[in-house]
Each structure stands twice: as structure tokens, then as C-alpha cells.
Amino acid sequence: MDWILLDGTDYVLTQQLFLRSMGFIYLIAFASLYIQVLALYGSQGINSIAQLLELIRKKRGKTAFPEVLSIFWWSASDRTLKITAGVGILCSALLILGIFPTCMLAILWFSYISYLSVGSPFLNFQWDILLLEVGAISFFFSLQTPPSIPLLIVFWFLLFRFMFSSGSVKLLSGCPKWKSGTAMHVHYLTQPLPNRLAWYADKQADWMLRASQWTMFFIELVVPFFIFSPEPIRFIVFILFSSLQCMILLTGNYAYFNFLSIVLGLVLLPDHYYASLFGDMTPIATTDASIWTEIPLALIAFTYLFLNIIQQISLFKPHFWKPPAWDWVSRFVLCNRYGLFARMTTERNEIIIEGSNDQEKWEAYEFKWKPGSPFRAPLQVAPHQPRLDWQLWFASLGTYQQNPWFGNMMVRILQNSSPVLSLFQHNPFPENPPKFLRAKLYSYRFSTFKERRESGVWWVREYIGAYSPTLSLSEPTKEEKSSESNSGGKYFFN
Image 1 (cartoon, rainbow, N blue to C red):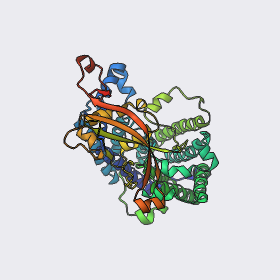
Image 2: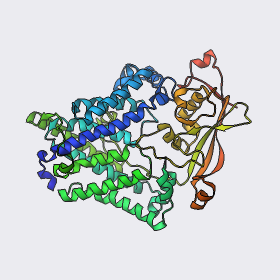
Image 3: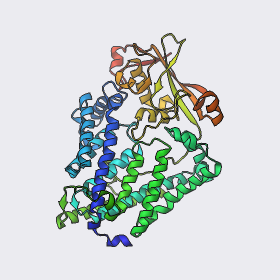
Image 4: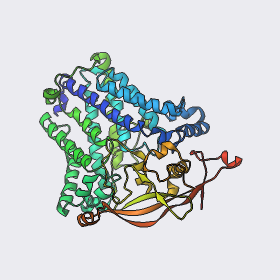
């Protein structure tokens, strides 16, 4: 029960380091979004935010804004989309420098939720909601120095819930791979965006793959209970958590997820662990602690802890009671449920898009990051997240009918949309778009050492079948214009 005797004056440097690190995470998130926001959400993008908000406004009327928090209600022009991401980059840099941290955290949180509220399916990953939840608590955490101990405990419990839930969902799912100890035998291949090291990790001996899985379960299911232990044990907890995140980071591309997880762990340790490295750090300007800040922050912390406990219980009892205000809290992306890879996919399928002008000769579009040509090595792209490449992994698990955005993307390619085409490594039709477009589905596996040595391939693939029919673009009639898709065009099957 060492945490009962915590003194906020022992966590002043920890507070500074944590808040500046949050600026680093926000910087990654907004910079990554900045370079692809028009392709995803612009007027010529895959899912136009402007058109989506217009549909929501017509459907929900005056209740639209409270239900969908977004600055883009006022303007969703291409310029506004870029400027908002640019403001996020600027405010992140100022937060790193320790300038007006509370103000910067408020702007960053609202800017990011503005995208997330209308950004599905490209902006609803677990690290997106974790960033908003940690960012919201960080705002209150920044309000006084020394930091509020109840809020420090809130961070600890969030870290506990995040790690413990990550392990629990794997067991609760009933996935045979996790139960048999063979999940890691397929993980490196079937994860959304493998990197080159994953190609080698996939070839580990059976005992090494099994050992890594049980080590992961130990860190996710047992170690979290020591978060509330005395300080020396918390140091070991931090090292184990960080080591797990580093291993995930080295063998996959999970955007800023692993960095954010490590940053969240920083709050476990008091100042003297960081003093030798960051002792000369310029103090962040915040309000001195007083009864006028301590009491409100404590009330916020205890309320949040109460809601977090309910969320943790609901992991094991899905129909457990929730207070009437739960929907309101969820609207602010707080008290979220976490847990990646609850069920393992056992095969890897990839969507390959091809264009043609005569339906005789077909040429493939090559994405920048996802697997395509068997001769391209798996690439390292994190902490940047190419959200279209990521979403295509999910699309390959279903059908094009289950992914309406996929049809929008195909229309944009047929329309020669420069923002969307900027997401491709190779456009086989640089002058004029093709008349026809189709998507094919292939099964992929890593090549063996022998195959790599003899032919130079990193991937071996086998054709499965058509993912979509052949598509062509045609001018809509007046009647069709009134009910067009949000991509602004109409495609036809051939």
C-alpha cells in the first residue's frame, strides 16, 4: 500500500517529462494525419467529411453537434482539414517545449476528437481512442504543480486496465490459437503491416514462439497487479511493460501505439529515476497546488476511477450496470475498452487493384506500405500510420459490400483523384485514369530462406478470386445525382 503515502513533490519532474512526451505523441499523430487527410477526408477524398456532416445534420438536426463533437461543423473545407492538422502539429511542438501546456492539451484533444468523431473507419483504432483518453486526463494532470496524487492514481489504474484487458480479451475470446500456445506461429505473418524483422521472427523455432506468447501473457495478466506495489517493484513493472512494447514495435507497424504505451508508464516512477537524464529540464509553467485545485481534481479523479472500475467489470460481465451518464462519458471517448488481437487470423489475404482500358491488359496499382509485389520487402513505416493500407487489411477479411468506403476509393481512382492517388507507390496510369478497375484477392505467405535466396521474393502468393466485380465510371443522370454516394460519382459493374 505504498501508494497511499505518495507525495506530489516527488513527481514534479515526472509530470514535466510525461506532459512533454504527450506532445511528442500528439506530434506524431497530427503529422501522420496531415500528409493523408485530404486523401481520406477531403472534397476529392475517399470519405468526404463535408458530405458526411451534411447527412448527419439532415438526420439529427439540432442534436447533431452534441452527439458528434467536431470543429468541422463550422467548416469542413480542404483548407480547414489541413489547417486543423497543422494547428495540431504546432501545439504539439509548443507542448514539447513546455509552453502553455494546459491550453495546448485542450486544443490538441479537441482537434483530434474532431477528426475521430467523423473519421470512421480510418480513425477508430485503439491507439486513437487511447490517445484521447490519456490526453483528457493529461489536461487535468497539467492544472497544478506538484501534480494531483489522485490523478496520478488514475493514470496507474488506466495503465492497469489497458494492460490487463489486453491479456484478458485473448483468453475470453476462446480463440484456439491463444489457448494452444500457437498464436505467435501466425502473428508475424498475419498482422496488418509486417516489417522486415517480422519476416525473420516468423522463422523462429517452435519453443521460442511458444515462450514469447507465455511471456506476453505473464506481462499482461500478472505484472499489472504490481503497479500498486512499492517503488522498486514499480520500476521492474515499467521495464517489463516497456520491453514488451519494444518487442512489438520492432516486429510490426502499430503507428504511435507502442510509444504511447511507454509514455503512459512514465508516471509509475518518481523524479529521482529521471533526475540524471532530465534534471536540468526547464519547469513547465503551471498553477501552484492549492485547496482550490486539489479538491476539484480529487473529485474528478475519484469519479473517473469509479467509471473505470465499472468498465473493467463489464469486460467479464458485459451486461453489468452502467450509470445513466455513461453514454455522455462515451461521447468524449473516455473509459474505453481495450484489447488487440482477441482472435488471431490464421491466413493472410491481400487485395490487389488493377486497371485496364480494354479489359485485356491489366496493370496493378502498388501501395506504398502494404504487401503487393512479391519482390518488395516488408517495410518499416511506424510511427507513421498509412491508414488506407491499414484499412485494406481489414477489408481483406470481408467483402467489398461490407466496406462501403472501398467503392468510394475505386471511384476516386477512376476519377483520377490526385489526393487519393498520392497514397500509391505506383500508378500505372499517370496521364489518364483507366476505363475499368477491378480488385483481386490473393493469399500471401512469407517466403522461406531457400525461396528468398533462389528467386529474391519476400512473399509467395496464390490467386484466390475476384474481390470486386469490374468497375467503370459513367456520368450520373439527374435522378441519380440526388442520391449519389459520398464519393461524388457512380460506378457500374461489368
